[in-house]
Amino acid sequence: MHHDWTLDAPMLRGLETPARARLAGLVPMDVPQGAVLFRPGDSVQAFAIVISGRIEVFLTGPTGREVLLYAVEPGQSCVQTTLGLMGGGHYGAEAIAAGAARLVMVPRAMFLELMDSSAGFRHIVFAAFADRMTGMIQLLERVAFQSVECRLAALLIERAAGTGLAETTHQDLATRIGTAREVVSRRLEALARAGLVRTERGAVHILDRPALERLAASGTPAAVT
Image (cartoon, rainbow, N blue to C red; front, side):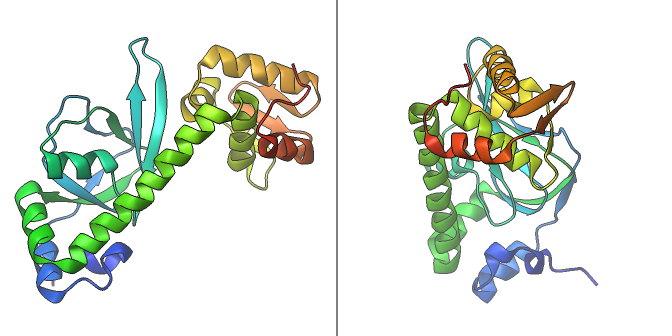
């Protein structure tokens, strides 16, 4: 018996039966880590519903520097896709599977039909869109008003979780806080001299978590230069 994948998608709870039946006829697809889902200039053809995994959306500048705009996980949406489907535009960023992911692609025609006929589907799309836009504004605020040190400290704390060890590269850290790899390397050296962290190839050890947390919350650089 064919499994109804919509039961595995929390964001579709409360959807009307006819709309759910339309979506249930679509076949989920599995994508491997590193798979590119779209690139700048591609036309928007479908609305992605992520069942499991994580899709990361990057913006690449003229110099080749990348910035992580946002990630799409179960229950979330891709703002570029939503805008493209409703406005007929093209992608301006690149989406890559951060790990193995399972998703369903809702064709443009079905997406537009459901937006017209299903109040539940419209609510799902616009609620996810609003949540994504809030995250984008918060990203802009961090990049515009928080120092590199503060953003770096916050990311290291998040990455290290309870282990005190953040397994990462300088380039990955730079991409995720919106700066250059050389800048991250210099800031990590300063944090190491101040005794807050210890660096090694592919990892950063947190030595003084309270101090790093204060730096992350301060919004301005501490005396680590």
